[in-house]
Image (tube, rainbow, N blue to C red):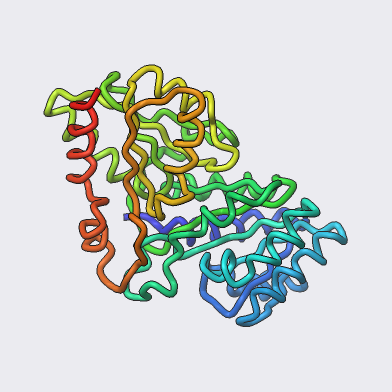
Length: 311
């Protein structure tokens, strides 16, 4: 078991800050991603706002307008909902150099309950022009994204998760190119799983189970949700004619919607969207919640069998 994506990202950002003096941190009164002591480590480079996310976003915009590279760290529900107008109008509209770190996303939040589960954040952020949206699938990819974020110029939203999860990628070989999907498995042309975030581990389990049933799948990892890799989506649809999207997020407006928008216009195929189905999250063990919302490994296997029978 490795670090969570949120802690991996924050830890790497601190390491980068030791040699890169060009960015500052704005934080709320939350233990989001291990940056709570940033100001003690790097004097004058952290600004704390308490539980005042709207004010924090405005201040981040002000700092960025004066030439600073700014990171804003808080729970995703507060960053994307409470401060929605400020993100839209004062960061995205003027294309300011602000990276918003949204943590505690999806059903993984567990005991914190519906109020703290960000399952609509991608839907909200994706509609704003000028913003790029990234989501790592493990601690390794989160570490890589910290470097990408520091070098990035413009509005950026990074979606991070609460709990530790197993490492999937090899740090020496894993590569992220903005806007380009990664093929993680390619067993054949029966079906393609298109996945973003920590659900990748479950998808890989499902693909191995399907292989034992003589169903050969591809797995496409979408680390850049916006702009999405249209070319890779169309290629996958042409090759397999059956697509299953998987996300720890509502199916309304998230990854599944983004993929559907592309393929409905460019290459219509049979599709199934696995995610939260028009419901709120709730308190409970994350794995039990995945089962309840039909997002477990066996649900992915079942969906693949069903969609193949429709082809």
